[in-house]
Amino acid sequence: MTQGGIPVFNAPGANANAVKELVIAGMLLGARNIAQAWDFARNQEGSDAEINKAVEAGKKNFVGFELPGRTLGVIGLGAIGVQVANSSLALGMNVVGYDPDITVQRAWQMSSDVRKAASIDDLLSQSDFITFHVPLVEATRNMINAERIRIMKDRAVLLNFSRDGILDHEAVCAALDSGKLYAYICDFPSNRLKNHPRVVTLPHLGASTGEAEDNCAIMVAEQLRDYLENGNIHNSVNFPEVQMPRNQCYRLCVSNANVPNMLGRISTALADAGHNIIDMINKSRGELAYTLVDVESEIGEDCLRGIAAIEGVLNVRVLGKA
Image (tube, rainbow, N blue to C red; front, side, top):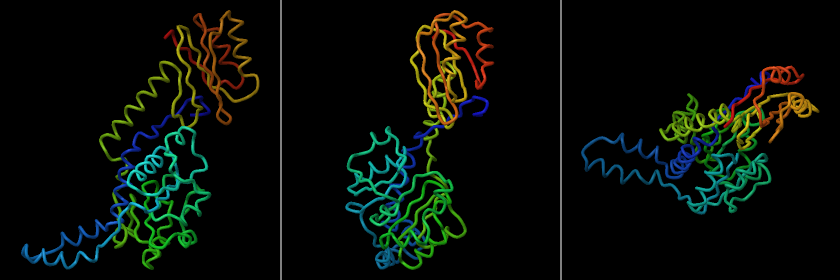
C-alpha cells in the first residue's frame, strides 16, 4: 500500500474504555479471588442450610486484599494505558508508568500523579499489579520471563489484556506454583493456563462491547470521509498525520517519496500551468511524504499527468472546491 501511495488507517483509542474497564475488573478478580470463590460457591450441594454452612466455613480460603494504597505498574502509555493509569489513581492506587515512546497527545491526557519509571525493571520492582499495553513485536516477545519475575515484588498480580506472547507462560506458571506471583489474569486461554488455580483466563473480551464496536465504526467512517473529501489523514499506520483546512479552492493530494526538491518540482509544474498556490502543507514519515496544495483554478489533465510523471510521485488526485 505504501509503495502505491495508499494510506492505511486504524482506529486507535476507539476500544480504550472497554479494555480499561476489563483491566479494572481484572485487578478485582485477582485481588479478591472472585473467580475461585464463585467456582467454590456454585459447586456446593445439599440443602440451603448446608450450603450456607459450607460457604461460611470455606470463605476463609478466599480472603483477598483491597486496591487503595497498592501500586499499579502500567507498561505502555497509549490510549488504553493512559486511561487505565488515570482510573486506577481514582481508585486510590499509586501508579507508575513506563513508555519511552509516549506521544505528546497521550502525555497531555495522563494525570501528573502518574510517576515515571526509569525502566521496565524499575517498574517491576515496585509494583503490586502490572498491566501491559504494548504491541507484540520482537522487542516485547516474552518481555516477562523468569529473570524479570525474580525482580518483581513477592505476590504481585500480572494482567495481560494486550497480546498473547508478551509473557512467558511457563515462567509465569512456575512463579505462581512457587508463590512468588499471586495471580495472573489474561485474555488469552491456553491448555497451560485455563485450568491453573491461580490464573483467570477470559475469551479475548478486551474490546467486546457494543460501544467499542460502534466507536470503531464511527471513527473509521469519519477518517475515510475526511480523506476522500478533503485529503486529510488521521491515524494512518503508514502515512504522516496531515490536516489542512479547506479553502474555496481546488485541492491537489500527492503521495511521494521523501526526497529533496519534491515540493519545488510540484510547485513548478503548477506554476507552469498558470496555477496560483493559496495554501500548502507537506509532512514526511520515514521514506514517504504527503503533500496537499490548494490552488485557485481547476487543475487540468495535462498538469495532473505532468505531476504524476515526476520521479518519486506515487499517487496523485484532485479534489473539487469544498
